[in-house]
Structure formats: C-alpha cells, structure tokens
Image (cartoon, rainbow, N blue to C red; front, side):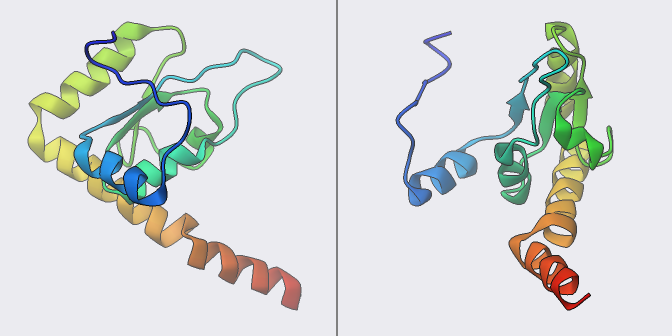
Length: 128
C-alpha cells in the first residue's frame, strides 16, 4: 500500500488540508468498531463532502444516521472490502452518478450541518 497511500499522522495545516481535499477524487472511510463502541460521526466525512468529494463509508458509522445511501453518500458493509470496492467502482465508472452523489453530499453539508447552520440551531435553543 505504501506505493498508493501516504500516511500522515502528524497533521496538516488548514491550507494543506484544503489542498489534500482538492487533489482527491473520492473519500473512502472504512472505520468500523463493533458494538458497544461504534464510531462517532467522523468530521472528515463531512469535510470531504463539503469539499465536493463523494464518500464511501461504513454503514455502521454514526454519520449514516443523517446520510442517505445512494443519494448523498455510499454505504459499505463493515469488514467487507468488496462492498467498498463496488462503491468506488460505481463512482469511477459512472461520471453522472459521481457528480450527483458529490453534489448532493455537498448540498447536504451546506444546508444541514454547516457551522452557520449549527450556530443558528444553537441560538434557537438558547432563545427557547
């Protein structure tokens, strides 16, 4: 995998992060922890979507609570490499589908969970 993947555990600046998203084509998020731990939302999923990347993620990740498989993201089964590969293959071989998933994901983040939307929701709660 070293020939295809560069592991960067020290973090990157915000500018570098934007460059990484800009140079990417798809985010694959195969994180899976079995019950009772499960895995939270994973901010990276929504950052990638905001940057216009289609996302293939584990169907048991918390982010799937608000996303829709085949509409704004693609879900794959935990511990099933084939289901992740099929999602990626569909995005690669069908440019129209790729564009639709990417655009719907970006719109979802903008309309539903942007920092502006979060702030508005919190202010509404405080007013109540």
